[in-house]
Length: 144
Image (cartoon, rainbow, N blue to C red):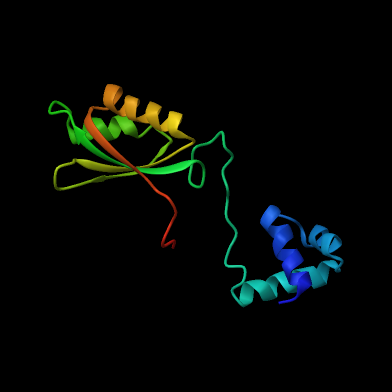
């Protein structure tokens, strides 16, 4: 790796959708030379992939807080009713039915603590949750 590779990585970090033409212009290379450099960086594993980053108005993967909510259902709420109630909630990534003291582990992505508070209130008021216990992810340890 050299200074030009570092420049390329910096430019792609800011916008991975740059055309090879624009990337080359920014780092002082031809279109073909920029493309060859990027392909080499990909082949040696320096660039492992390109990721979609959601805007702050959309609480999806990569935005705001990633949370895990242990949830116990009200005795009068059945599993099917709970799943039907949470399906429209775009903040919820996954819900796993569990054994043990809680009924579900809900994996969600919210914009901030106010959005988390609103989600928990909704789960309790409209989705049949009797009790919740929330954990906030600090950082991913393993990503596949």
